[in-house]
Image (cartoon, rainbow, N blue to C red; front, side, top):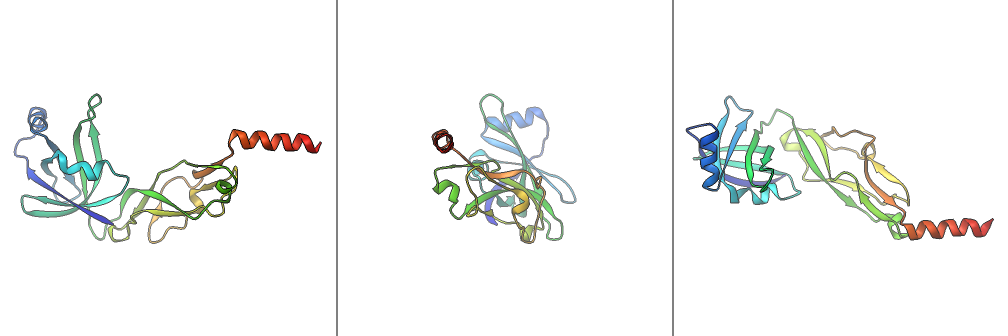
Length: 194
């Protein structure tokens, strides 16, 4: 799993007015859960660009005033109007404790349905998985080399390696749709045969 470092500073005062003052200084209030106690800290907003605005999943190396923690981003909140990052929650990674994470899907192979003129439509971009931190994948490879026109590949067709997939097994991951032009050509062919 890819790693990213975020530098933070402990927060002495908690509360709405203190968080507002931090945001005005381009800082993001954060909380680290999962340890013996919660750690409240703030980080510069610019450090979150690669973590938040990326489809990848990162293991975050939190450096809070010299103390290092391994964590993953659990939750984040945005302002409803100006899309400013308001708050971030991190979950402490422990080697013997499983975590639940949304992992991106990566397609491999060439679909015969796409080669025949169909369009590959991605239904799920991420799958929810549960695993030990050492077994968390960067992405989940989905082979679409058997995907024909009008067919779809479901979550239950993916074989997990050292992790469990929590997403509904009957949910489609990708579908090859038949374009209108190809549908009309097929209906004309059927009419011509009659």
